[in-house]
Length: 70
Image (cartoon, rainbow, N blue to C red; front, top):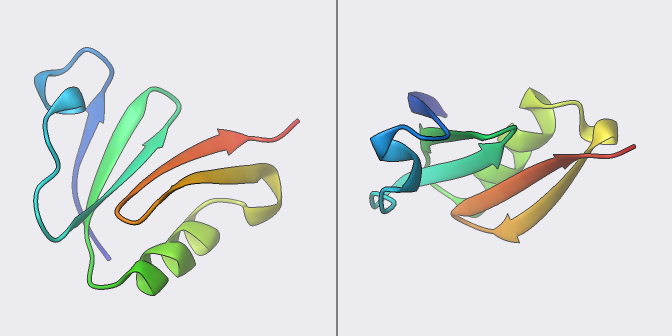
């Protein structure tokens, strides 16, 4: 996975349309954009990059929302 850009809420790219071949991860009022190849690779990346036991993954490839569990 290659990180392309991070947008914060209110920045122009935050609500821009998704580019083909990228993965969007929405978390904590930020949009993280990564270059990806498959849905499986994206899911594995999310599980490793964030603490798996503390998050809830919502959505479907290529756009996921991560929420912190309490």
